[in-house]
Figure 1 (cartoon, one colour):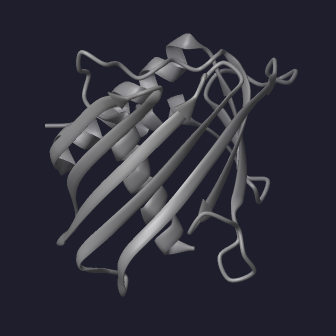
Figure 2: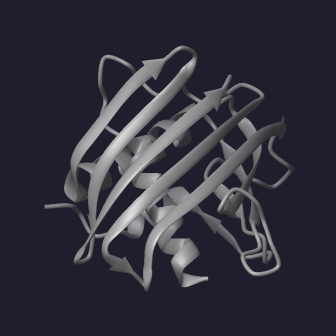
Amino acid sequence: MTFRLLSLAAVACLLAGPALAIDYPARKPGLWEIQTGEGGAATAKAPGQTIQQCIDAATDKAMREMGQGMGKDMCSKQDLRLEGVKLVIDSVCKIGPTTATSRAVMSGDFSSAYRVESKSTYSPPLMGRTEGTSVVDAKWVGPCKPGQKPGDMVMGNGMKMNMLDAMAKMPPRK
């Protein structure tokens, strides 16, 4: 579980990337269902997680900017480029004493669905692992549910949190 959280954090930094001539597409406002899996699929050993996230344009932008700040602090390299209709991100980031060298490929229209496939190597090993892969599949499911506000997330275990509230509680970056 802890390794998956670290992997998701690394993917989040990777996906946040720098603001370059090629910019990340904004997601359609509303409720997104995001499925994550290690190694390309959920298994009994490494079950995936499904998260529901309510966003609007401002929340989506704030989350990208937060990730960009984390990436700027953690990553010595973040290259973003278009390869056909896919965005490819190559990065080199520090997670504690470990250097994570990663490649993520993003595809989809970001209005109805998107997919992120990421492969990373870790040196020295991160929690005993020298490499990792992850897949994120997201689909727009409609408007946010009654009572939800932008930034609300419902984790696979039912835990609820608001990303904007969590970001507001973070210490300021130096």
